[in-house]
Image (cartoon, rainbow, N blue to C red; front, side, top):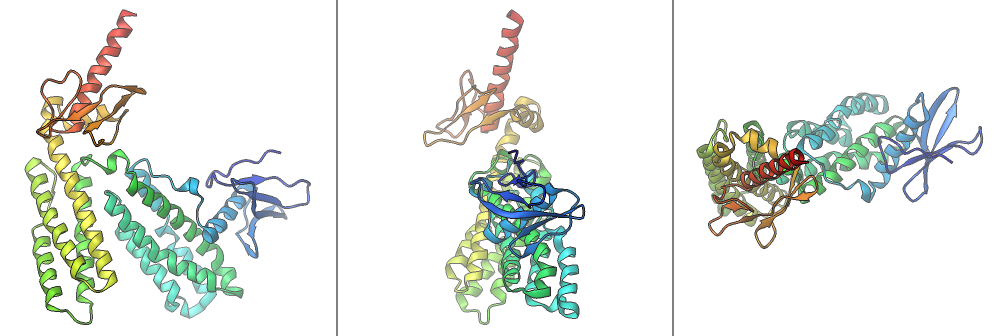
Length: 402
């Protein structure tokens, strides 16, 4: 029997009914039934237990609603814990979450009437969604990805509590909007966590353009403001807390107020300021007694450290730009190749068309070289681009001879 995979949720399949009157079943990767699709009057509705989705014009869409309910109630499958392939993909996946705000507001108005926006869980959800809007660009570093994960928790926790508590008419109105919000946040949370652990190429190494660097710096500054607000909200501030907060404020004041990656000097100046900010954040984390402040300070330290490392890598790439023509030329050359992570021996593999064109290796003075390179490059990307060009030239020569 043909059981098509659900396009929106590949971990689930729609199993057609055995006869014309029975409900179709939605099954998971282990062939276990997770819900049903009921047909009546030319419309379809997904159902999980007593919860039902909206009326749909086709069975696959109703089956996806079953997937929404299942993920909301039981979290994601291991197969969905894959890192995003790019920062663009991560941001695109995050975009639908704030768009659920109006549906939550409208459904809450029907469920709770005039008290909707004062319902504690609803208010917390809306506050969390506002934070997600502010941090849409935060996923430009590994630390930034983890910041978004923490903020997503501020949406997930009240949404899950409200879904658990709602009964009767309240649940009828709120179940599907909450489930859809939870499904989106569960999927993005799982994949952002994996992305932070195994970052794609545009989340590690040099920034691909100055604007991306500026957005990462802005994320660090917003995180600093959160730490500052968290410390000042404490009921009492001991002398040690005042001292570490003063040092943090002083470090933040040294951050660039404008573009931070227009040239090598700007990159290195911003990286140095971020290193100071990271050190001050670690001191706040070590001296704070409030768990929330420690969490924020640790988050700031990670974001500042990641952004500094990427700015340093950008400075090195800029130093190699003249040898290849421009930074864009280097990054374009690397686009169809795979540059592996650095090993303990200081080497990085370089695959071009599934063939090893490297490896490149770090020299004793911190530069990068590889087969045929007589003048080492400052950046691994510069060395890799040189080997890729040699590889392509050799391919072209072989084709001409053939």
